[in-house]
Amino acid sequence: AQSVTQLGSHVSVSEGALVLLRCNYSSSVPPYLFWYVQYPNQGLQLLLKYTSAATLVKGINGFEAEFNKSETSFHLTKPSAHMSDAAEYFCALNNAGNMLTFGGGTRLMVKP
Amino acid sequence: DTEVTQTPKHLVMGMTNKKSLKCEQHMGHRAMYWYKQKAKKPPELMFVYSYEKLSINESVPSRFSPECPNSSLLNLHLHALQPEDSALYLCASSQDPRGGETQYFGPGTRLLVL
Image (cartoon, rainbow over all chains, first blue to last red; front, side, top):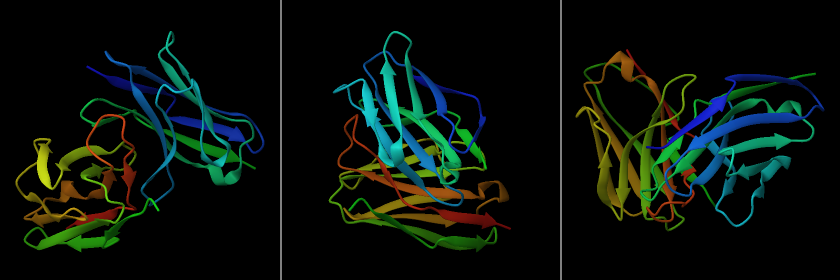
């Protein structure tokens, strides 16, 4: 069985501060891992994807994530938060059948 | 271009109505997906089409009926829905159904059942 856990359903940061969204996974096979962002009343947009080519993955909008096999983590970071980063973020894992298993989501709030 | 389009954007229907949601992609993708998303929750997979054939049905009630007329188009036919079916319905597509392929999502149809 595979699962994804996102620690913290809500994260609040000040504008310009570091963003850290936590994701831990459980998988019996090497995982493909994704981070998606969802703005209000919109669909999901791919931020980045881990495919085992490199442990540090760079994505759009200044986000990056580091795959840590020993800690089974794939945390998302951004050095400096912008107001426009306020959204819901989903970590997801998929398997050989390409079915996505989502974490519960983290709502990021950015304070001016 | 990684665009998946969905129509309509919003839909209000009564419990006795019949309506359809439409999803389209022109990326040559051969796998398409329907998800249901309730407020403050992650998307839940409903159906997967691989090469225009239904490959996965996640025990969805028969009042939801998917259809894939061709490789670019995916429909979801709705009939006799319940108020608890009100949600955001998302369509996604991927190059093929193999593991690791990125799923690209449409903007969704927000459905309200009265």
